[in-house]
Amino acid sequence: MRKLLNACLLLTSLIGYLEWGKGMHAFLFEVEYQLLFVKTPDKQAFMHPFVLVPIVGQLLLLFTLFQKMPSKWVSMVGLLCLSLIMVMIFIIGIMGMNIRILLSAVPFIVTGILLIWYNRKARRQIAA
Image (cartoon, rainbow, N blue to C red; front, side, top):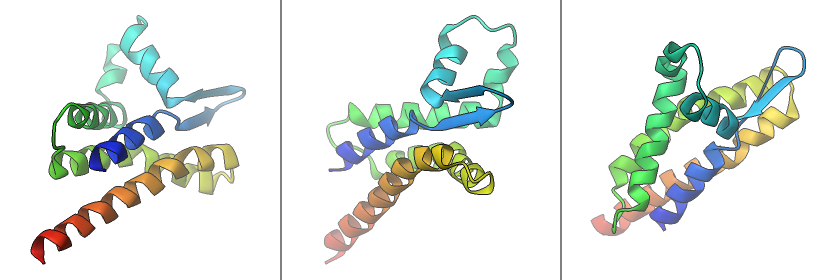
């Protein structure tokens, strides 16, 4: 079950939606593609914490998908790293009253809550 939740977290993190300026918008998977594979003049943009930390979170979740028994702690650290950007997108959606931005973050947040709930449930079953 944890592997499925990690896969869902990874996929829902890619659909985060951003809007800025006049007519400028992109999904997170488009922004990541631009940063990783398209030549950009400013490689320092990649080193910004709001870029680097979520990418590390995605890599950690990707790593858990190849484990036979995914590590609870690696999953939680991946969730924490990705939450940095996704919760920020959610807050921006609320503050700007932009339903598209807000709804793009909801699947990630729901999946993150389910992962936390599953980990707590699993810990209680082990203790009993």
